[in-house]
Length: 211
Length: 227
Image (cartoon, rainbow over all chains, first blue to last red; front, side):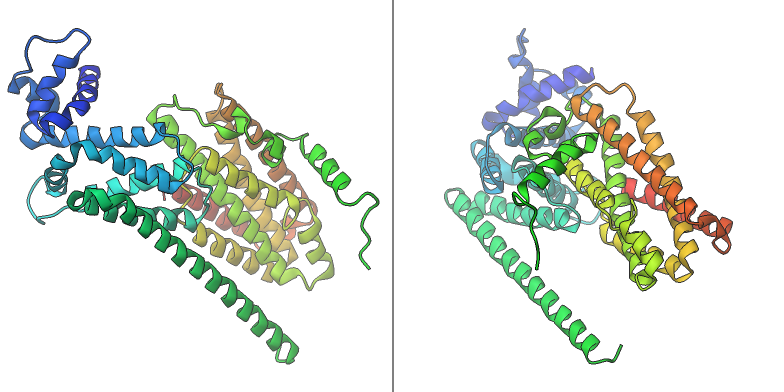
């Protein structure tokens, strides 16, 4: 059954554009099988395969997000900017459905608090990680983390911007990346200068005969 | 006045690269091999558990090489004023020599190749490594050697475990990884022998010191696998 479930999820993703992140989309996925069913799945079958109520919709959203990461791997890009722009482009066909999907993902499954930021953070970080892989990033140590955290924040901002102003989202993303790059180079220069000053102080202290 | 060898530095650089071709890890230091499947690809048919195991192994190995470099930096910082001990630390087959730095360089390339998350304890590894090296060096040259002996014993066993886990792998990158780990294990065991030759077992409270350092290494390995 797992194999059928996986196959149906894969077939349902392209239908999101038309039917949204709904149980109807999952039900209609059987119509796209190599040997298509005559009619969509009944709701009970959707529940059996994908869970009750919003659980099924969350499963569909997760599959769509995973397909987005696969899309990033398939598009040839030269740098992080290209990878993130490709990911924003992936959102375009389903933009009208995204606000509700993100709201559903951010809602906790049970109880309080009213908002669960973890799925959104996980999504942004995974997109950032894919972008770094596509750009063949070779960061090591703490810079591996800072680069991804920075890119995740940038992408999350650009994606939110895209929900309200899709036409300006790519330019907004580029502006954020350029600003981050500028900040990074400023910090690097500050670090070099600080090391230079520290070494000078050590040399002065040694020459003063204190040690 | 600095005298360059006749013909400049290029013949020596070529000779150096040719020498490095003799070892599996030298492939990672040869720019002409950077697009080989063994150095530029990662298997995409691993199960989730195999993938997690590979990532954990490389994460720990990289963290270990970071810590090792800083252990020797700590030892050298304390012992450099001792003519014999300082020269031993710097010029032996381990310490701040090319071998240990080569290990770290290769591990960094492996991390990028297999798209592995480095340990979040990177800076802790550096500080703890330097501290361990400096403290044991302050106890004396023999204690520094005992520290090296204990660390290399744990690392040798750790690499042996990884080699067993990589048995049967057929992807070119994993075949090369197995050879690299075998090479590094042999290097570390050579370091262990050198430490013993330089009287590590005469260190004060050798058994206790070795136990504490060895236990610390094992705890660090388990942490870096996960964090």
